Image 1: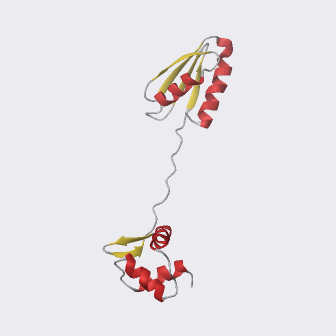
Image 2 (image 1 turned 135 degrees about the vertical axis):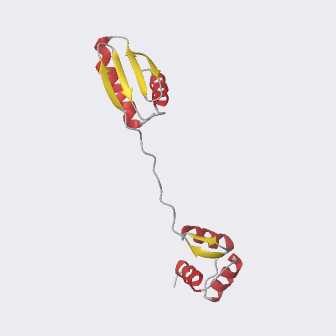
Image 3 (image 1 turned 60 degrees about the vertical axis):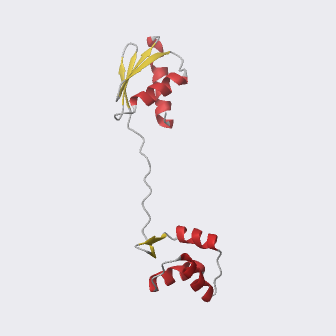
Length: 139
């Protein structure tokens, strides 16, 4: 039986309230982990002290942030409008202004909408492509 199995077996069979007691029981079972090794193993096995005793707990699910949905609306001859989730417009607007996109005159950002002014209507599609790239990689 490896160390991880021994730890899980001991905490499931006995009420262990102290890490030093667990360490002694593991030594009796033929394992001699240092205190730091034991602590790391407990963490990796999701073993925590709950109500005064060591027990395995379900780890919390990892929640990955979701990129906000952004849509681009053309407003010819020289405007683009970005619609995004509430609170993201200023972040995207600032990122666009810092990109120094050729043909971009400037942005005005509210809470969920950005107006993008293009200097020359012939550059509208180029600015749109640059905006699309920024959206894909994130602000």
